[in-house]
Image 1 (cartoon, rainbow, N blue to C red):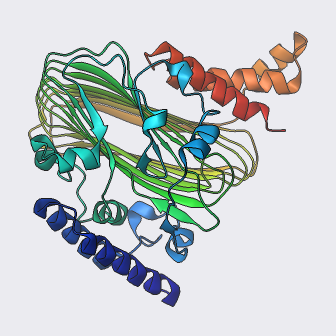
Image 2 (cartoon, rainbow, N blue to C red):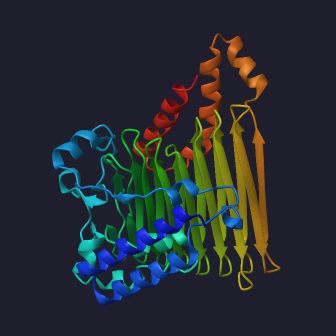
Image 3 (cartoon, one colour):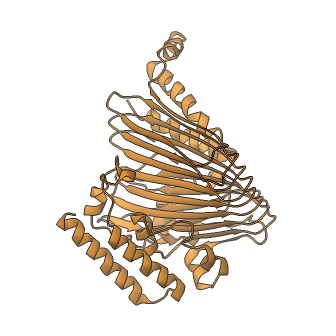
Length: 440
């Protein structure tokens, strides 16, 4: 460990002690934070010597001294966020700017009766019992340094509780916007979501960063999907081109629960996205889909885990990457079948399209099977645009650039078409097309 990194660890400890001195957290949360900072100081920042971080070097994060993101005026927040396509989704939304709730940009009109959507800090202060029961239980901090760091500085985020036997008519949109100052800043969003029994809900989680300033978003989302419930979860990461984004999404599914997650990654200079679901009840279904569109010198690392803990569960996974310039991508998808998870049916696929000779992808699909009556497959492909298809379009009078974009968008649509909410699906398709249209 270099001297600079060691000194930065000391700064995190000092910042934590300052947070403790404020003394606002209840005893149970203060205890969790203390355990988390101890874990972080023991683990330190990961290095490429760690197998799980082999292809992603976070030294640039470890060496940078990030300050807490400053508060911004409502007027400045509204001005900058207005360009981020909030209204067109037409659904209830909870907006955070620099990690703090922004009531003037939020709107929870139209929520069904009994649904709880509020800031996590408010839920903790109000003594909401399920928060204490579930917070920091699904996303463990003992072995993951960034989860530990997020938990140590856990202050705010979103608390969403869907009461049992409720079907939402529209998605709930959690939006995090960073408007950094003159120095590198950091935020620690923390979301806790409980989908009650026999309910149906769609949750959208977005991260945006207007401008090109450097900052770090270290986010953790914990989701519990109870018996006979259905959740569609969509995450959009479109941070600043100079930003760092490290995020962990952990889902816990019980009996006959279905969770369908889609991650769309467009932004950040360096991003690490970890998505995992534990199928901890018979009859569960899980789907993990992802799309990453990388340009310039972006680096994005996707780690996924489908953990089959009980029998008679099924899962499907499809991740697609489009890489241009000198960008690098990492996909590490793991399917685990526990000894008691007989009759598991799981399929995993990672497909990548390289639009530049300098783009690189490291892909590693994995199976860990400890049961004998299962059906599991996995695979990965890396290729370029089909020359014959490109020639066909060119022969119809379509320009080289337009033909390439058409084929690339068609490649991406395999993932985007699986999103059920039409307004979000079309908006994401437009964002991908806009990103491709800016490239030479």
